[in-house]
Structure formats: structure tokens, C-alpha cells
Amino acid sequence: AQKITQTQPGMFVQEKEAVTLDCTYDTSDQSYGLFWYKQPSSGEMIFLIYQGSYDEQNATEGRYSLNFQKARKSANLVISASQLGDSAMYFCAMRVNQAGTALIFGKGTTLSVSS
Amino acid sequence: NAGVTQTPKFQVLKTGQSMTLQCAQDMNHEYMSWYRQDPGMGLRLIHYSVGAGITDQGEVPNGYNVSRSTTEDFPLRLLSAAPSQTSVYFCASSYSTGWGNEKLFFGSGTQLSVL
Image 1 (cartoon, rainbow over the protein chains, first blue to last red):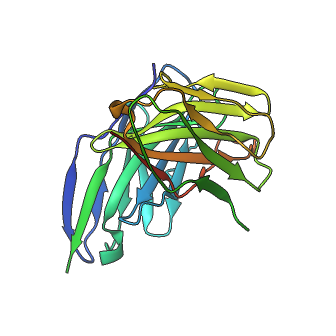
Image 2: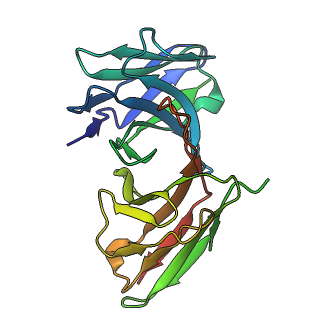
Image 3: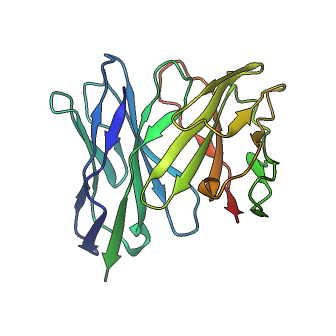
């Protein structure tokens, strides 16, 4: 069975600092996709970044990068130069095998950025 | 461009009542899915559809029914509401890129309380 684990319920960081949000996954599939979504207090879900299991390079999207370590089954999100607007809940997710684009999510990490 | 529209935004039910949460998308997306979000649990997949006429169960399908008679609509039915179904419900849709990197387009959510 596929599983996503996020072990950090909450993280605190100061503005302009970098922060790493942890995500480990479990799957028996050779081909899989990993995603990170952001949910601010407004409740909307915002796509941040995607990593495919066969991608040779770690994904990057602006200030977001994904530290993908396949052997360790980890896909940590790195946010560089944190901003106050980064305060939100962050979810790691994996595409469900043979379920189209449906995802299973981790329990999330609440990030708080202070000035 | 409306995107993914969920109605209603808020709903209060009594135990045993039935209701349908509506989800419509105007992007001609083939894939649609329903999730529930509970505090500390992240988002959990209820049901998903890979095309009109095709639906399947996700992680937590008990107590919910779905159908997909058109590409645009994917309603979620609660046949006999229970307090355990108090949650925020999200509908999402996406298209296939063939590369596995399809991001989900989420609706704004329905907050359901069952008394």
C-alpha cells in the first residue's frame, strides 16, 4: 500500500531563512509521482512542485526545491528565503497507482514564518 | 473561467439526513476526485473517477456514493449522514499530460457539519 508520512506537525522559521519540510513515502511501484501543496489559512490548495521517480534532477520552482532521495524514500521540500506569506499548511502527496491523477496526502506540516 | 465549482460552501445536517455535494468543472478534465480534510489528518481520498461512467473507491469510501454521468459533474452523495462525516470536503480535477506530473485543480471546499 502507498503511504506518505510527514513527521513535523509544526515548524517555525524567521524571515529570509531557509526551511526544510520532511516527507517520506512508501510504495512498491517503480514509477510514481510526488507533489507538494500549500494550504494558507484561506483554505485553498495551491500546487507547489512535482518530482517524478525517474527524474534525474531534483525539481525546482522558484524558491521551492525538492530534495529527492530515492533510496531513502524521502522527498523533502526546501523553501529558501522564507517570507511571511509562506506561513501555511504544507502537504506532501503521491499519485495513487492506476487511479488517474488522484493523490494520497500526508497529514501536513504547519509552517510559521516570523519577522 | 470558473474552474472547479463546489456547492454548497456550508451545510448543516442532522444525523440520518441525506444530501449531495455538487462538483462541476468547466475545463474538460477527464480526472476528478473527492477528498475530506479533518484536523490533523490531512486530506483523504474518498472516491475518484478517470472518466465519464468510471468511478472507484479511495481510502475512505464508506458512507459515500458517487457517479459520473458527464465529464463536467462529479457529485458526492451522503446517504445517511453521521457525525463522523463532519469535515471539509474538496473536489479536484485534472487532465492527463501523459507524463504523470498532472497538478490538481481544487474547488474551494464545502464545510459540512452533521449534528
